[in-house]
Image 1 (cartoon, helix red, strand yellow):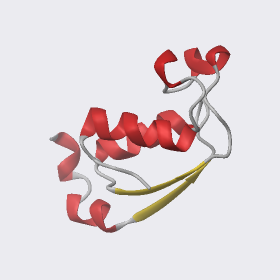
Image 2 (spheres, rainbow, N blue to C red):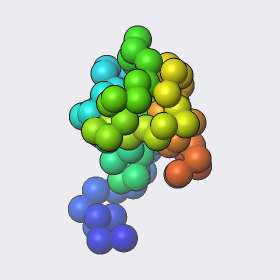
Image 3 (cartoon, rainbow, N blue to C red):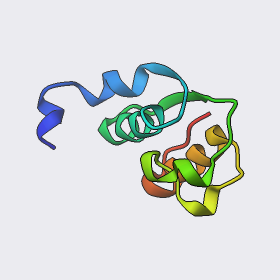
Image 4 (tube, one colour):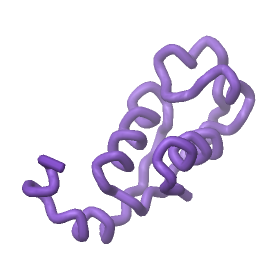
Length: 85
């Protein structure tokens, strides 16, 4: 609620974000962007979620073996009810 005074929520909803790389930085950045108000994210990553990387990335063990972009889309929708493409 405090941040709404800083940036108009309507402006954030109208911006399109393309995020390349959904590892330890990109996966957490995507989560943060959605939570602060960005609604139009396109996620890119050719890699798969691996068990040894789960601790530093925004995935759980239940997503091991899935493509990172699809797994993160599911997580963001589950946690925030906003989808990404």
